[in-house]
Image (tube, rainbow, N blue to C red):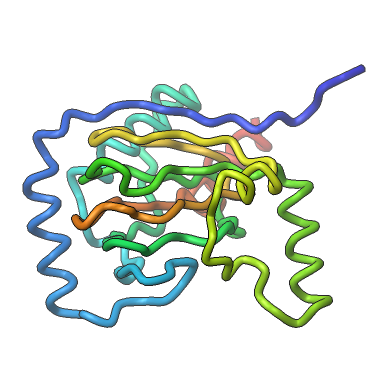
Length: 207
């Protein structure tokens, strides 16, 4: 038996000295745009995806992707980056980032029991999506998120800490469970899109 195309989850820890400034910046962004965007977030706040934000963090993420994961000398920065504020009872539904080569999430503030990161078996994710379309209801809008639910969709659980950053391929299904704490969980998500690597791909093909 051959095992091909495994899912790689890369985990690193960043010096959390930057978190105090990030928290202040993120709440300022929310004050300017209190509604935010609705994507996979349910009950939480999602900022716009402009890559003009979080310059110091973007540089650190670039160094990890280019130097530690891909062994490149190039400097490639996230094409999309956004903040998430998840108050009590909010969560993120299972989803993928279609246009992303690498995606990831950096944890800025993580109170106890504020929601874990789950990676879903791609086969079961596809089956759920197909079932959702067939039944014309929303399978993912479950208000349960119990151990039985995560077991059903064959999910692998990670318990993040402040300063943790996870990288994974954009087509890896993932979700975030409910925040059961009265305090906000704050994270920053990002995409390194395939277009960001266009020049490198061209260079390899010409070489």
